[in-house]
Image (cartoon, rainbow over all chains, first blue to last red; front, side):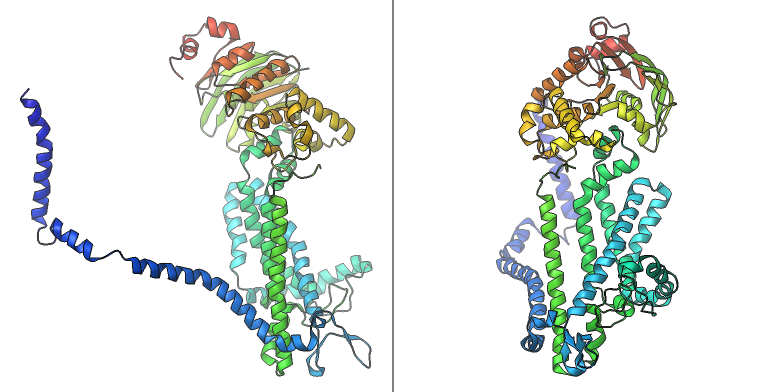
Length: 361
Length: 252
């Protein structure tokens, strides 16, 4: 009866002794409890610092809007001269040479400014590049996720993503020295020979430059974005979906089509759009191979120009205010087009993701 | 009509893990056979060997003989052909979320190139009736996605999907373990009705379930089949001490 309370009391006592011993050891460095309280009290409630932090973060967030607005505003002001002179005609008008009666779109010397060939060039080269890059990228992603032996998977995925890190000027140089001669000597004759009847491939451009060259180089540049994102969304498809299809007696290809690609299609659409975004605005490599001719031809082998390429080419040498303003207006249009493309793409994704079942078949 | 399954000296590995050791048994046609045993005993691996799903994992390996009807599935046929004749229902319902209810059921036939729309309509209706889902979904067959159904409905949809290709054998890997009691009893009723037309092999953790639906029961332990007999015998008078310990709840 007497021993029990003793044992109960002893542990706290011990702890207290230990604490005071530790306190004695570091007496010179530490503060007494009351001093800690005093120190903490003197710091106040820091309400002001908190408010400053809030404001600072808000400014960071607002700077995004600010930057977008500044760009749009600057482009709008810079292009007002051209806008005032041509209005909407700027994007649709076709001038005609008084002597040859051939269409003229862009002739700074004679004051003819129409952005039509650049809009056309940007759209044609971008969509053509998607046509090449999308099947290739999906093929790469399918191989990497579904069939690649483990040893190859890492290095291949790494290499694909490394393509995205190469500066576009390097792509441009490679295109000029390797791709364009290759197209000129082998591919273009083949295209004109076999598909010339469509009118899309005519042999009147001996340089090898043009839309096809631009599209091929763009395709290589957007390939890593599309394939790495596609790979990620394919990996995210649950294993149970693959098993469900296999258990129905599907071959491997059928399993990939029905169990993987079908489930991943929203993500794939998203990755294609990101690729398109890059293709529309890509400047350097395209400028080096598209031919920089402000004309519209039915042939995809013809020289052309894109919105980005004409700005890069002419802005430094634009001497008249109208010329500079017209280039700025093209910049504004490119700005708007990229935003519109993204908006349309988001709507598309939204329409697909609403959860509505795919229609039968 | 279902066919019997004959398993001779079946061994399976998962990497270095010898998950099934010398399994021999005969599963009767047009009956339900339950496989019970504690987690990790190899019963899931066993049913996955019956439609060659086990080997879809690159580190998995199988030896031995499995005859479904008169077809030696590891000798005479490709996995794809076998899986067309042996349907499977998984533990977690896995309908195709991007497809309508109708397309989910029709997917097996469409996959194999079946195009007759009129016949397809009939088969979808029959499969959904067989899986006791028809009345609940008949009004929005093509409107709703397979993923919009409840868990129990999804599992019955998966059963309908497996039935639509008219399999000879239906494998069910813990088909009710992710479901609530009401859905579970619906699935059990379903198995009870289906076993006159199909050979059903059902893996379950739930011993009452095995007792309710199956004529034959096999007890698996540590990769071996300890006992295989009529369900009545297994649950009332097992010949092996380990079976008795398991069904009386002494372990597992």
